[in-house]
Length: 413
Image (tube, rainbow, N blue to C red; front, side, top):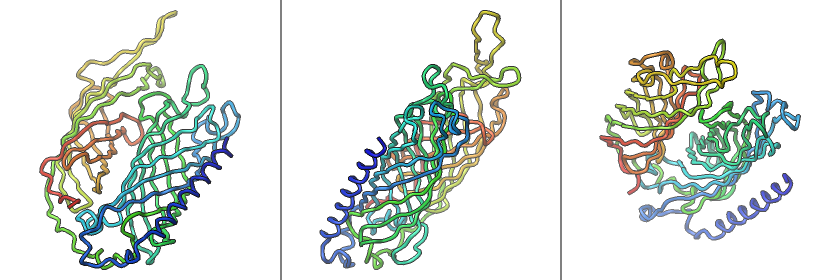
C-alpha cells in the first residue's frame, strides 16, 4: 500500500514540475522588466506548492512506544502536501505593508505505518507564510504556520481499539509551525528546505486526548503564477501608507463542548458526560503598528463542567456524576492580550485569571491561543483554545467576533 502511495506521489510530482516548466516557457518576453508606468496593472499573485515532510513522532505514551496490537513503536511518519496560496499585488497597500506574504489553503496525507490502530489521516488547513530575511538575491528565509482539521483517524474504542490511548476522535485539529529557506531555481520556481513541528488533538472534546506531536524536515517546490518576483526592485520600495496608532475594540462570543476528568478519591476519573461551554469577551486593543496590537480583556465564561463531582457508588449500582450549582459554573476574569496582525489572519495570545467566581475549578490562571479569520473588514471567525495553569486542557473557543473603531487601511485597492 505504501509503495502505491509513493508511486502516486511521484506521478503528481512529475505533473507539478511539468506545469511549472510550462509556466516558465509561457512568460511574456518583457515580464522580467516591469515598466513603472504599468505597475498599477499588476494583479493578485498565485502559487501552487508541493511538499514532502518526513518526521519523527514523539513517543509520549505506551501506545506509541510499542504497547499496541502490532507490537511495534510508532517513531516515524511522512506526509505529502499540496497547497494553493495568493498574495496582494505588489503595488497595492497590502503588498506594500505585508511584502512577500502569502496565505491559502492546503491538503495533506499522513502515513504513520499503523493504519489499523492509528489511521492514515488527511488534513485540510489554512496556512500563511511570510519572509523574515533576504539572505542573498536568490535565497530568503520564511516562516509558515498551518491550522486546520485532520480526518480519517482510527480512534480509541473500548471493544475494537483499546490500545490506542493517544487519539480519541476520528477528526482532530491539526497545527503546524516552522521555518524554511526558499531557493530560486527559475524566475517563478523555487526549492524550499526547512524544519517544522506539528500537533494533533481533539481539543478535549472526547477521551482520550493525549494528542500526537511530530517534528521533522520539509522539502518541496513552489511555482508562482502571475508577475514574477525577479525585476520588481523598482517598485518594491514604494512608500507604505502611514500608520495611525489607535484603539480598536473586539467583542467575541464563543461556544463548544468538552469532556472532564472528575476528582475521585486520590485521583481523577473520566466523566461519561459531555459538558457545554459558552463565553464572551470584550477586548480594548491598542494598535501599535501594522503587525502588532496589545490590550486588556474582560472574559466571561459559563462552563457546565466546573466543580462537577462524583460519589462512591453503592454495591451493584453504576457510578453517577453530578453537576455543581449554577453559580459555580460562571466566572468573570481579566486578561492581558497581544495579537500578531497579518492579512486575512490575526494570531492572538492571552494570559489572565478569574476574579469573580465560586468553587475550585475556576481558581487559577488561564491562557488562550486564538486564530481570527477575517470574514469582512470588521467581522471575523474566532477559533481558539483555552488552557488552565499552562498545563491542563480546558476547552475550545469556536465563535464569531466584531471589531469596532477599526482604523486599519484597506489592503486591496
